[in-house]
Image (spheres, one colour):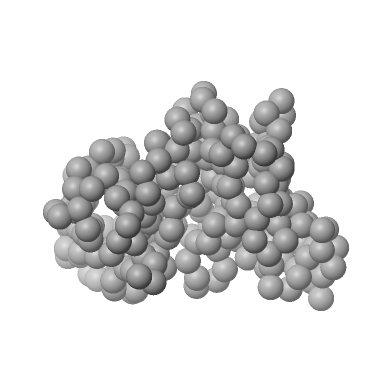
Length: 114
Length: 114
């Protein structure tokens, strides 16, 4: 296992289209997190899962956003009816329960909405 | 609610001189504190973490940080800067023994001048 993998690395889409991103966490980690990072800012928390259960969602996560982790392994983040304001880097991270060792982050998916 | 404030958005040092990146935190509970580094077009990498053990924490690449509860600070230091240290640095807090998602500061960009 070489870390957290995210796919795709880059996505350009037209406004109004739907997009889906995938994250494969470190296999021993039962927690998975999604963050969003815009230019010049720190990552902002979106949502997280413990196994397949979605335990917390940020107010940033509008109803156009949905995340799943159906079998407690990989996760998907879908954005419906994309807007230009959705352009950002979407980061996935995983950790063991409690996160005492910090999170391991993937390289991110950069979304550009044109 | 937990939060961190990184006191400088940009720090510039000469190669071989000390580095100081300042961070203050706010937390209702005993916090876990982290520093992450992000090099251009690279993922976030954990530098070091404080989780209620020793207050002086040593990390990778010669960095260290000291947890000072009375000052609610967790400043990052390095005795001698190297050109490869140029990157974005994030101070991060999690309370409730790591059971709440990480909250990132806005980041400090470190420039190292030859």
